[in-house]
Image (cartoon, rainbow, N blue to C red; front, side):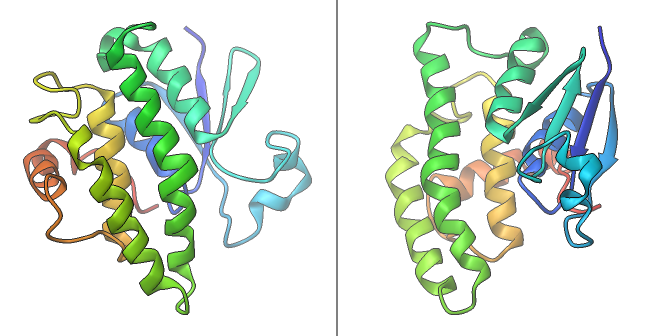
Length: 193
C-alpha cells in the first residue's frame, strides 16, 4: 500500500483526518503546514492545495483536498479497520448525513465563534443545530451498538467545539456520548501540535 502524506495543522479541520489516522494507527507521514505562519500561502503548498487550506493528503501520486473527501477516502481505503458502513446501506447514508451536516451547517456557524462579536450567537446556533441532530444518535454509538469511524468523527468534532468554547454543555444525548467515548478517544485526539 502507498504511503499517505498528511498535510495538516492541528488547529484546523485537519484535526478530523489526523484523529482518524491516529485512532486507527494508519501509517502516514505528517507534514505540518503552520497556518499562523502563512505556510499555507507559500507557492510550494499552493501546488498541493490550490486554496491554501488544510488538510490535504497525497496517496499513490494523487492529492486529495477537503477534509470530508479525505475522510471518505480513508473510510473506503480502510473500510474493514474503520468498520465503515457499506455503500448503498442506510448506515452509509448516516455517515454522509453527519459529514455534510458538519461541513455545510454546523462548521459555518462555529466559524462565527472566533469573532468575539458573534460568538454568543454562534454558540446559540451550534446548540440549536446539534439539538436537532440529537435524535440521530442511536446509542451507545452513532450507528447503534457497533463502534465505527462515525464515532471517531462525531467525537472529534464535538471535542473541537469544547476546545473553542462552543460546546453546548448539558445537551443530551451529546454529553452522554462524549463521556462514554472519552477514555477510548482522548489518546488519539489531535487538537494540539
